[in-house]
Image (cartoon, rainbow, N blue to C red; front, side):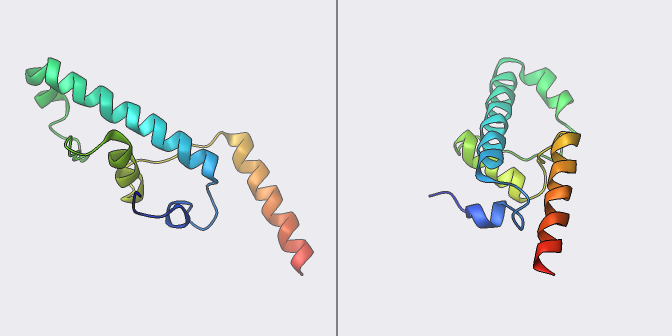
Length: 99
């Protein structure tokens, strides 16, 4: 089981499980691509990633690295503008129903 938990990652129900799965998959692909690039082009990789604040432990599996980066705030989920508006409308409607 990967720590942190789903509830911690959802950040107050901002992200649903589908979004978290997509983040983990895309993040794992990024980690894998970066590892392959660093192995194939070690000289260029040193220059390219010298100022990067993403410290990735390639001994861990890519999904675990992606989840860790997201939890630490070094990787983010970028939502489309329509999704953000729909979430805001849903929150307003839910808040009005509670009152």
